Image (cartoon, rainbow, N blue to C red; front, side):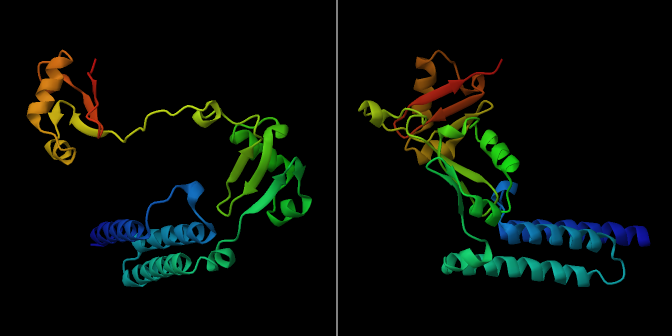
Length: 224
C-alpha cells in the first residue's frame, strides 16, 4: 500500500512542479535573478518532500503553490513598477570604464580580480585593453562593450546597404510538407512542387528539411 502511495505522491510532485514551472516561465540559469534562483531551489526541495510525504501530501503541495504564486506576483510587480527592480533584483554595476577598474564597484559586486578576469575571458576578451566598458548585470553575467578599434566591422562602417534578411519558416520536415506553414506564407503545394522540380527533386520525400522566407526564397536540405 505504501508503495502505491509513493508512486502517487511522486506523480503528484512531478505534475505540480511541471505546472508551476510552466506558469512561472522558462529561464536559463544565467538569466535567473536572485529571487528566481532561491525560489527554484526551494520549490525543488519541497517537490522532493512531496514525493515521499504519504500521510499529508497536501501540506508540501500548498507550500509549492504559495512559493509559485509569490514568485509570479513579484514578477508582475517588477513589470508594472520598473523602479522596484533595483530594490528586489539589484542594479547593474559598472566594473570597468575608459580603461579604469573601479575598486569600489568591485567590492559592491562582491567580485575579486580573478573572477573578473575569468568573466572577461569567457566573453572572449583576453586583453583588458580591448574593453571600453564592463558592466556586471544583476543576474551575474558580465556585459562588455569593446573599444571602437576592437569591435567587428559592420556594413555601416563601409557605407554598405545589405538587403534585409527575413526569418525562415519550415515548410518540409523529414519528407513531410507542412501545409499550415505554407499557407501562412501565402503559398501552396503547387508552388512548392514547381520549386522542387526546378531544384532537381521529384517530391518532398527526398527533402529532410525545407525552409522558406517571406520573399519566397526556398532552401532545401536532403538527408545522407
